[in-house]
Image 1 (cartoon, rainbow, N blue to C red):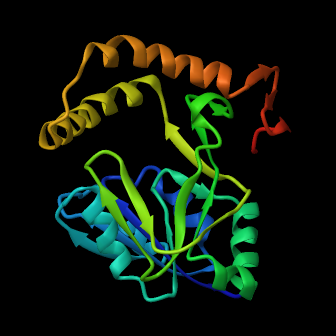
Image 2 (cartoon, rainbow, N blue to C red):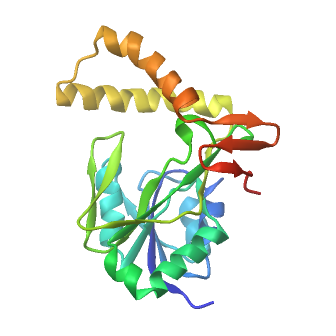
Length: 242
């Protein structure tokens, strides 16, 4: 298989127990894999990534925005694919990316591509509510995009048109309820610091109206309902990935 002109860029903490799936999903077809690893990590993640052919750079933690921009700056290929340690590029998505790269009309028209992300949460694929299609902007031409935003919700700003792919990126979100509960303090602290720095204040509407609206939007506006092992969505009848 010929390699695509893509640099896969990842940031990582202590992820030796699960980063293998992400690395395996881009092995053999990505031009290079770059990992910026937190300098205080000593669980074997660096050795594991190097063993899988990735280039690893040790850096102190600077926040999600700065860390992701740092690894993207090291890319040597014209296209960049940002991937998290708990994600997997499916064969269908890889084939769509390959088709976009080989089509001059698409690759010259669009500076970036987004695609849906499907999350596996506590033993179940989630294809309803606010969780799906969860379109993420992860593939872009080098020099035409950069990460911006706060500590919690970084976003990719693209200078140019954005195309849309259809195949899913798989996200192995939370391994268990305990894993989920352990994430809450970390992200809540980041959110509080970001809110204080921005001068945002919590009002009674945030505590009363917003939770109700979130439920109504996710449950009813999404038009998503379970039907046994399948799901009916606003896009039609779908099946879970294997």
